[in-house]
Length: 305
Ligand SMILES: [Fe+2]
Image 1 (tube, helix red, strand yellow):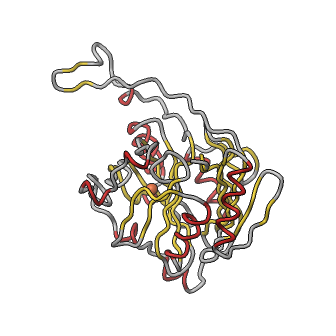
Image 2 (tube, helix red, strand yellow):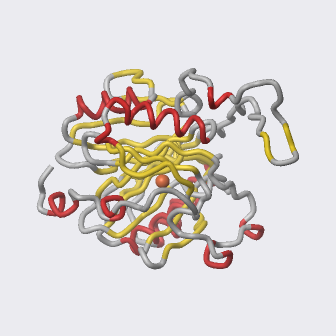
Image 3 (cartoon, rainbow, N blue to C red):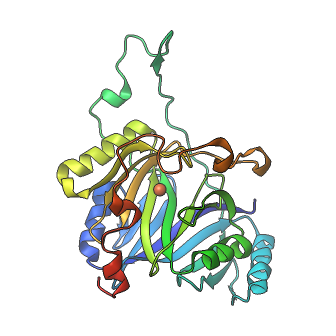
């Protein structure tokens, strides 16, 4: 696969001071005003001022100039204008206005965390020692940007742009919601496009070491402000990942996640429809209505911040 990583996003939001403070507390490092880095992925989030929460730009890492040329001709076949430069191409997704940049970048190498020893019936892998998850040290900060989810007023057109133009692979579909789980790396999904009355940012997700890191980081955020809690702790069916969603001050959700499925061969992967996966959650609290249809969407459609 020539696309190899979700490198960076720029989001627009009102009340940027409060939004920036939220993501600092979330565990991202603010390296310059509005620019945030993860532990492994470098600068991955830029927060800009805008009337409502939207995804403005998405940067994807590719291997070489051939990959850029391939995407440029596929986009041209869809009638999309392409802006080339020395090591990148850019194009704007027409339905959402998201600017997509493909850039030649080295592949991301991540150093794995120390293996967690788990005890199970008949198998004691951790003896005479407490679980790391039970100790009170702060969890390691997010390792990388995992995925981003956006609403599109024309989800099929957005899907066409990302799959047939940019070159995303489809890992799973959720026909009831009209949503597609798309990947530009070996992660099960880096992008999900769902229908919405206006383009909006639904959530960003950030990869943590393991489920204890997800639980502890989210619990600390909720202890500071219980109103931030949205949905979790649970495990998704599609993607298999553990999740806990919080609400940022602009109304976008921010997910701590771990243990997402990895797909290295299309032929070996069985789509969710064929293996009876529960689409939303294998387990967890009931999904709140505001997760599927955020409370402020009608207001956003009327142009309110
Ligand atoms: Fe997610």
